[in-house]
Length: 493
Ligand code: NAP
Image (cartoon, rainbow, N blue to C red; front, side, top):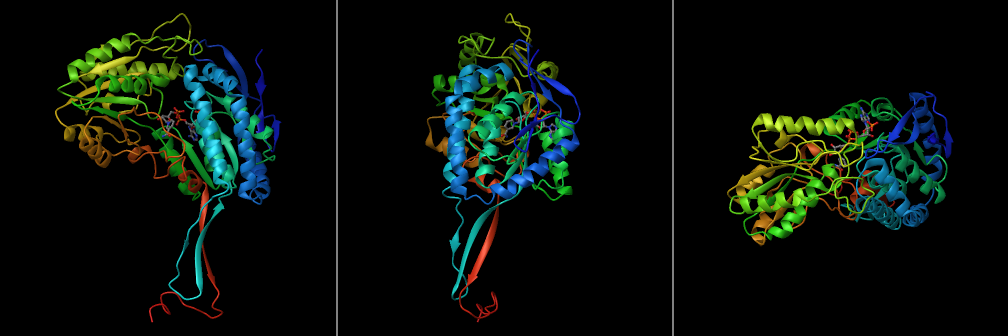
């Protein structure tokens, strides 16, 4: 018998109205880790009501005091880092060094957001009129709905929750159904840190019902969503009906360009880590490798040798390089795209199959395709598995054109020793992030994170942008002249 987890509403664990549960499965062993209650629409209503009460209390507390709860939460996360990392590897499969990194990212953003509690900067500026003072202040939005994916089960929720909290909002949080346990752990940490009841509420269950109810709820003022492009489009459309603010962090098809002057060994390590870290299931994963024709043969030879040496298995074991994919649907999707790639005429150089490292879970070989053309589906669509497509180009211009040839624009990288090449890539690649001589993955929490084109709708997470995502900006005019002054009229005289 596994433990059953209830919803968290108004500071207490409460039974859902549906009486239904779903299983939380370890993708390496297929063991059941927990039974999770499925929220109904009326539970989402209860969560919103609790959040409204939480908001009235929390938004009155000065930001610097709110931040003290976050500093404490960061300390608790630090103390529990190993326990949370082990649980995360069991819940979603990525290897332990990566799950430790995930928890560390949550600690970092928590400390960073807490630091903002003593800043929350607005602007002061001049007035066109005499004896008039102008400034902007940040105000909380109200109750916000946060919907997150499973690939960073504690980091991504923390990227949203911590800035939303320090900015004074209350939260209804709907985590991915593949990683609910880590969401419960985060709630535990915040409660222990002293977050008042109602300020965060957790509703679990399918996106198709619970997520939809959160998005549609008329009293939720803003949605922050991270997930796939298709779901993101639906969320955006739906939010327009209730005039909700919506921030979207969606998919990627991230390119790495390796020029003929690159340090090939450095580039190899970066490509390997970028393409197969988290089993290729990162929004910033390297899925397209663009090689200069002069180094192509040598690079592919060395890459193949390295890929063959990757060890697949249980992420808890120190010798494992690549864990399982998240679930059966993702395994089948990866398999489907390998078939599509072959049918489209790309050359399957390595991998392409399910594999059995002695566990019943969802394991797939690291896979390399060469002779990929930009018009192929495997060059355009996000596979979100351990599949890397390789392209050849004859110069930087062609490389950048190819890099820009998808609907996504999240991360990108170039390996080169030329300052000119590096700066041209920074200038011309259509992406929210460009790395020079580093892989497409490795964001730090004090820089803005997000993408252009189909990857998002202009918002950024992390950095100071994160506070803006969860704040309303108010313009304030203070006239101390004691007389009626008319902007644009008096000032024009
Ligand atoms: P997904 O299917 O879109 O799901 C994301 C979240 O939305 C989950 O909590 C899901 O719930 C929920 N959901 C599904 N349908 C919904 C609906 N109609 N209304 C409201 N919520 C709904 O994405 P995923 O497969 O879990 O995650 C992988 C995707 O996320 C990839 O495309 C990846 O690139 C992207 N991602 C982007 C970033 C970024 O920052 N740009 C970061 C990480 C991942 P259930 O789990 O219950 O289905």
